[in-house]
Length: 189
Image (cartoon, rainbow, N blue to C red; front, side, top):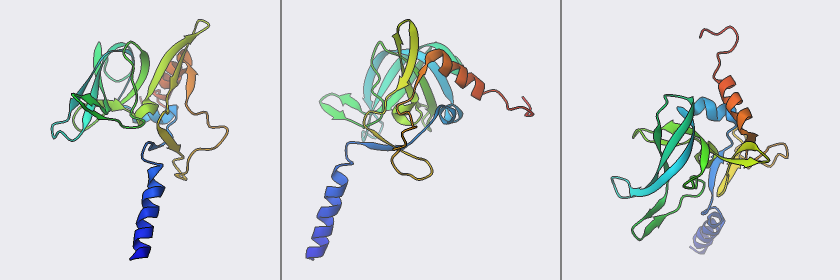
């Protein structure tokens, strides 16, 4: 019986360090583009947290004004949904879900879930915050609260050549997304 208790304590302690992080597969721009149903440039206007229908989870709905659509059907506004938020006095935090700031512009890589909600592809990996430095616009995703693992080895990405988080000049990111959607030579359009 003592061995079982010792094993349980060891398992609890081993898992304790992982409770505040989300593990996700590393997604490059090609994978984000391929897997996304919708890619838009837009600014977060408002954010409202709501319970799901079963009242087991909180979702934050971000109203986004779309300035440009890079993939999918264009609409002037989109509801982008992330896990977590605060409703009344109850809060739910989901590490890596994407902390979208009101008034901030992003490039959003989105997938449509079974409830018809648009969610960030790869969690926070699918939101590239747009900033400007010396007159040039850049887009960078945040990996806060996430442990990124290699898709083949499922081990944390430690390769020095892996640039995580991803950062691009905004114009280069848009061109890459457009190029990735073009049919390959010899393919029917």
